[in-house]
Structure formats: C-alpha cells, structure tokens
Amino acid sequence: MFGKDNAYAWLGYADNSYIASRLLWFTGFMLETPVQGHRTLELYLKTFLISRGVEVKPGSAAWGHELVALGKAAADFDQAFAADDVHRRLRYFERYFDYVRYPGDHVGPDDGSGTWFAFDANVAPLDELVAFIRPRIRIGADDWTKTVIHRLLHGGDANPHQLRALTDGNRHLAIIDCAASGEPDVAFTSFRYDRPGC
Image (cartoon, rainbow, N blue to C red; front, side):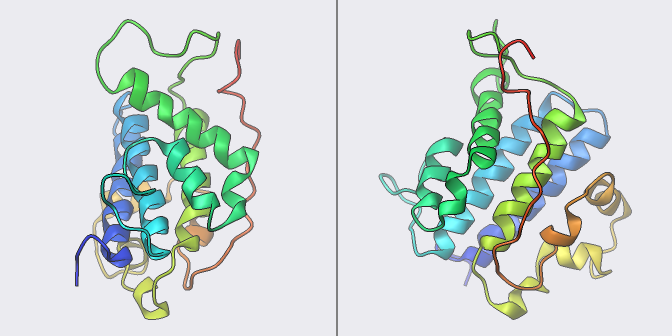
C-alpha cells in the first residue's frame, strides 16, 4: 500500500516537508528554510510524476534532485509546468541545494544574482509552487480528505504549532487544501530574486 509507486504515500512526505519548511521559517531557521523548501518541491514534483505512472528509479524522469529536470519531466504530462513563472522559481530553489546546503564560499552563481533569505524570496514562492503542483497530483477523491494538510486544517490532527506555521501568511491555502485533483489558476506574484543585481 505504501510502496514507492504510491502517490498518496509520497504526498504524505511532501506535505510533512512543506509544513516543516514553514515551521523552520517561523522559528527563525532562515538558512534551513529554503533548503528544506527545495526538498519539499522535489517531493511534490516526484509525487506528481508518480501519479502519472513514472517510477522512481535510476534513469527515470522522477530520479534525482534537480528541480528544473523534474519540472521539465512534469511538463511532458502538463504543459503548465513549462510556464516561465514555474520554471524560474524551480531554478531559484535549486540554488539553495547548490549553494546553501553545505558551508561554502559562495551563496549564489557568478552572474550577479544571489540567494536571498526573506519571506517573499523563500516562503511566498514556495507557497505558490505548492499551490500550483499539489492539486495537479492525481489521487482518489476520498484520499484528499485523508491528507496531512487537510487533517491538520480541519481538526483531525491537533498540533497548534504546525497549524500556525502552515497558515500564517499563506495566501494560497484554499488552493493547497484541495478536495479534488485539478488544474488551479495560481496567481504568481512578481518575482525578482533570480535576477542579477536585484
């Protein structure tokens, strides 16, 4: 039931990672938040691919940690993943994996752009991407009410710290807490943090 080909099981890991990302932010772990955000997006993208029948195994489209490659694989099933707003944010979160995950001399590429540690550079674009990807995952209609996020929001799991972390400043919560799989219209805000000299 919870094998590596089970999208609902993967969604549980992705939801937990998302809540943990926001919890890190609101408890002051600003360096760790975007690195955990990268993991969150990786899990949601893999869950999307698994829900389309792609196996997670070496050499498959669902293998690896590169968000851009996972996003391109997702675009083979849903062209909305090729949108510039989606691609730029995935590429941006990939920087945290490349430059911030471990100590080093550089925190950004050599093109004059960098990595940023602010709500609108980390948490807000993460929320947008989760709102974009999560509802596109195909699971049964009854499974949506059993998800980690739905149970937390609707009283099934009473953890006030997790609930507050999930809800504080989250403009996309109504889309994220979907009752069925679909293709939501996500309003992406202006995003400049991946531009040189911002």
